[in-house]
Length: 453
Ligand SMILES: Cc1cc2nc3c(=O)[nH]c(=O)nc-3n(C[C@H](O)[C@H](O)[C@H](O)COP(=O)(O)OP(=O)(O)OC[C@H]3O[C@@H](n4cnc5c(N)ncnc54)[C@H](O)[C@@H]3O)c2cc1C
Image (cartoon, rainbow, N blue to C red; front, top):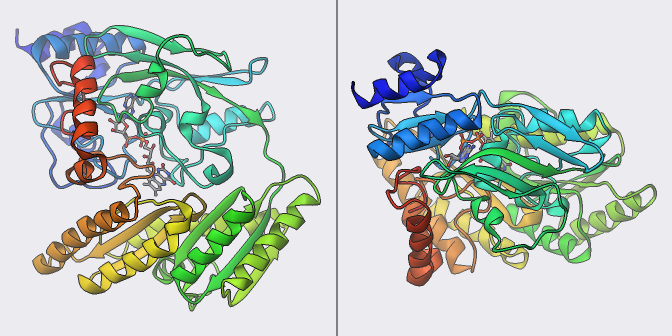
């Protein structure tokens, strides 16, 4: 019996897919990393026990395992590798809300939006909100330590992870943390797995902290002549308070969204800030007033304020549509660079300069209140010179971020598309430490090989 036949026999009939047409749909994530392999099969377990069976089998035969949530990743983290298996957690989707402990106990394949909806039935809220919240899984969110739009005030995924069940590279299932709010027993192993991009273990269950439902929001939209002026406004706003949202779109992304679906955005705006306050009654008006003043002082040409929830949501939706809208313009290479807030105007200037130097279109959107930007490099892949310039611009933007003391990735992860720049940010000692951790947990190197390291 060949190795794969053993796995097929050990799991329920529908768990192992080898049909090439179906497997094709599991080879890439949203980044469309061109350096993609041909896997042996897609394995879709229904519970943690089946994950253990698959991983033990992989360990025995030295087969690479690429964990996969919903494939919305933007760094090639779940790009398939040759002769490996894609371990898709899509069938493990149970969600249980414990109102006494105010936690959600969630299987990894459940979508972020499904967790939010389940919590909302009990007047509770799971804050982390990637723009992709309708199409990404909790397992992927934990594995990338996903951020989002409200993280400027409410933090990122790791701030909500109280417990994890993880299947290790030898198939052992460990339970880390739990429903306890405070727990410092032992090394902080729980957090080691958050953001580990499937390279240290497979998350089979997460216990997520919930908070009371969010209060109604006031929305402010300000237009600026350019992204640097908008970034200066962000520095002023963040120096004064922490809004519940502070997002940026540049002229190219505003126009891409308008081309996709007319939403009444100002096509002439050099840059747009969308900010919200969810401070309790009365206080939100004060916060918006402070933000308005900061924007005007930084050179805003227009500032618009609304307490109407639907109107506010329309602007937020426009921001969420920006990545698909820009992607409709050509082949996309998507960056995720971030800096400390005071350096944001310099990063914006640096991104503009890279676009000029490499004669490449770069749209910019940003979780600006976190200093986390997404330069979106668009090019025509039929034009080899344009593709070369885009690739060089991609690397140069990461160098600019590092030169400003920043990071090559704020929330999407290193995956495969950014790993060549990781040593430049971390340096040899931290890279060596990272490798030692990887070797200790996955000595055969079967878990998501090629990602991060
Ligand atoms: C339009 C758009 C907007 C986006 N906006 C945001 C945003 O605002 N903020 C943000 O942070 N991200 C954003 N993303 C990126 C993406 O949605 C997130 O990275 C998300 O967390 C990926 O989840 P996924 O389920 O799709 O994971 P996948 O893409 O399937 O996998 C991502 C990584 O997680 C690993 N993984 C998945 N499941 C598990 C598991 N159970 N155990 C171990 N490892 C696992 C994979 O191996 C891979 O390394 C956006 C993506 C799109 C397409």
